[in-house]
Length: 608
Image 1 (cartoon, rainbow, N blue to C red):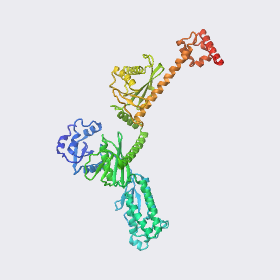
Image 2 (cartoon, helix red, strand yellow; image 1 turned 135 degrees about the vertical axis):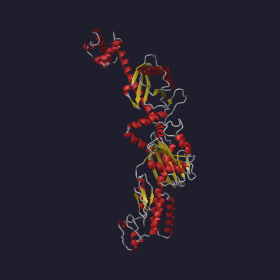
Image 3 (cartoon, rainbow, N blue to C red; image 1 turned 90 degrees about the vertical axis):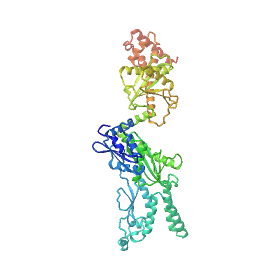
Image 4 (cartoon, rainbow, N blue to C red; image 1 turned 120 degrees about the vertical axis):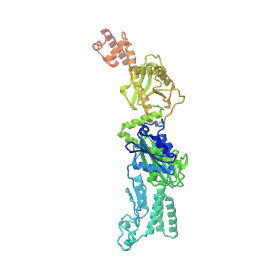
């Protein structure tokens, strides 16, 4: 901190109590809001030397010019207050909730014979609002079920007792179709209508079981009274609700009133999914995106999101299912991290939703900004491969030979996880005799990086060796000889099980088969193999052709290579005229070539 701000004097006045703290800059702008179980300990931690390795946090601390705080009774109060203040002030360095949508609600209108419909605008007029519904299709399904199961009015007439008694209204087509019982002409009592509203409220709150039990009792009574028409109507209603419940129930109905949360993080973003479960039925679900500002942990982000969701949905569930322990003391809330059973099934469902949402969002971002994918992929590779720097420049080595002959080495280069073909190289092996893959690898690696060091070229961050421990050890020997073994990360990839080997590590690293990191390494390996084998075949084919030309009297290796260079193929040499051949060789050799291929062609014709 600069001398302008004496934080020590303020720290002395901050108590060891729960609350929220606020950081202000030199323009008296609120730049950060945080919560704490112990205010003094938490605020002091920002000013301890080396307590923050994250650059953004260091920048935040450098801008602090004043600190204010608010004491509350419990940590939960601090949690709720922090959320409301962040939403109100949106400080620059706090997590930003990226959710600007207006989600619809189902409203039970505060009026005589209440209408039920959906709205995106909340009016505080005493009406009951249920939701919001992140899934509009889910909301329409519920409204469709209500319309099919219950006879409710859809008109907006003021159905007061006085107006109905005066006979101001007449039934409409909805009554004729059986969709409404005609309360406007007193064909349905308000008590009977309100009973339907109570059942609908139970359905919207996930209490379908109670509604089904009442329907079954009414159905049995209608049958005993021999009112079979009424019993049939009740049976159809029962079947509709029972079918809806079977589709909506995801776990045992004994799990009543729980909130379920899960989180998936990226470097700059986090995504949190929320499920509201009543009697084994999901009645609300939503996933939100949070944009990170500092180096916030998943626990901090999830805690903030839990507060936001419970406030938004007015949830008072006493049990919250989460993927990991949350350090929040509250006698009224129980945090559960399930390992097995029905609650684990709910958590898995939430995690599937959040990962799907994350993948979809990141795909959208990456299509608009390809560099985002590159940074994310390189960051993931750095974590997966236990590196301390992003692998922006990767090189992969592969060897090829044919029964010890024509040995070559190939190097392919990836920059920002993409092939950089102009940087591909291949080597004709010079110092190795016979099929010695280890020595060939040692020579190729040494020649490659000896030249890079001599030219002052920047070394790669990652070197991939196509092979197991033997090839890796040979490559490492060359790096040590050059004194660069500590400057780069080197790994070997074995083909059989796609295991990754590290120098000095007895056991290989296995990455998930769907891992993007493994896919990049496999692409490197396959590209190196393709590039190497193409060069190797050219060299082998050329060697085979040269050997055939050497069978002609008077032609040696040098002359054979000159002929191939000029005519491009043995086929063209075979059909060349004596004059054409004399462009490369003398008359005597030209006649020898024509004679050789003439005899050869005769043998082919006779089958000798």
